[in-house]
Length: 115
Length: 112
Image 1: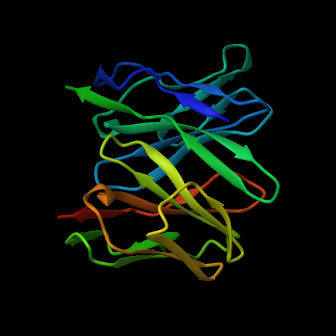
Image 2: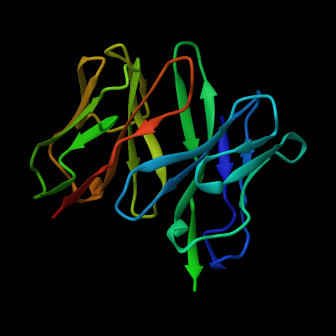
């Protein structure tokens, strides 16, 4: 069965500083990987996804993530954090089965942005 | 235009009551899901329906009964509510060929 580990529960970053959120996955086949963001009281918004091809993927709001198969990682990065980026970030691995698919989420990383 | 919409957004009810949460998607997707987010923000899939047929039931108590009248709607009915059912419930949808899911805003259920 697939699993996702986000080792950091909380991260605090100064506004304007760079950000990296870690994600490690376990899956027996080629993974489909996602990063979602959840602002307080809101639903989940997809930031970016990796299905295949270029291992560096660009997403919305200036985020990018790099898939590293050898490390089973899919870390999320942003060169300059804005106060509005403060939110909960979830990494997920998608598993395709016969006729359906499922997402397994990590436990999330709460990003705090200091002035 | 809201892609995946859930109602209500907040639901406060007493133990033992029966309640329903409704979900609708206008994305033309084949598959819909219910996820539960607990107090520690952990998200876990509960059910998945493809073209009105149940395809995933992740060991959820049978007090929870999903119903899909058509592929654009997936409702969640909960009988005999318990304190431990308090959580945020998210509806989502996807195309069967892709695993990318689009989520609703969530329904925060509080059982008192």
